[in-house]
Length: 428
Image (tube, rainbow, N blue to C red; front, side):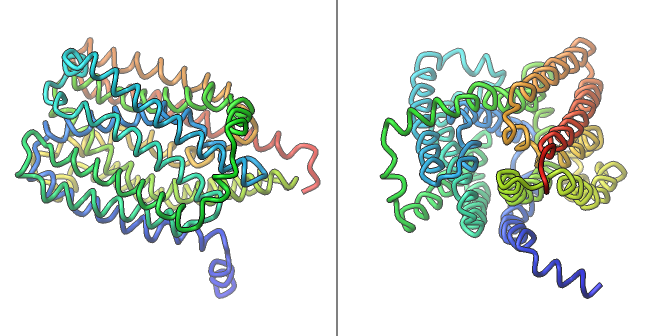
């Protein structure tokens, strides 16, 4: 036991993970701690409006950067990584301005298309949120490349504190759940500013050394990221958000609110660990692969470790979610606990497989990753379509979760196959 503790305390990997998990864990704890209050001061319909707004931002932010941030960690030269960072930020700015023009032109029909009339007050904030989230994502990968894990943790913590504070304080000042959207926007702004301040504090020389021809060269060299990875992430996030859009149009904003809360209660803690492990683990694995070392055995150990970490929490969700949600958030939210039980198996597999998605990028297998995502998207459309035709939200969720579980399980298997192929011909 003593030798195990010594190995754990001396492990650079675990120290870096702990840096991210501890600070980011505090950030997530703050966000989750206020939800028993938020569910009592905002109605399910208002939470549904917020879920719709955030689903839109999730999709537009993916398009805005072309997913060039996924390439930031791959080049051997830091200058190329800096160039990809600048490229992602510039693309995000350009797309956000285009989005603003689009909203000006289609302002009147947009709320009707989205199935919620109250979104009309917030659609002009969508380009701003898109740009800030794009900047945050790109700079997060740059900080990860530089192993600046304290900066990542600090940005996440600052974002969460301001987000939560505004949501609580603005609840009575704004109608139709406006405090929820305002809190998100303020948090996004603070997170982007913290990263930008860190960049300027450390010096911008490496960024100023990147020329426009360098940017064009990098854009061409890593073109497969917008062509495949962006489409992959776009389809993945849009298909994950399908219930929000479908329920908003066919079942009502209150159902969207239940789904949004239930999904958030699992996804927030899951993302905390999954993203923190992934940031450190992807950097280490890519480096090992570039140095000609074996990676499959290490990946297997990582998956087993993640399974042990998550087994008990997911079992508790399967057994007790409705009861726990009712106690913590109030009787009005019992339905959210039922939804959590339905999609817990799917999210368990996501927890195991998502941190390994970088393997496809590392080995330039984005085309197949995109094909798998298209199959999942089609399956989810069919699942929700059956639920809408049958006017049964439970059937829609069960089919959605079941199809997703099967395809995500195959994804995990495929990552293992890729790792085995990556090891072929290596000496270890």
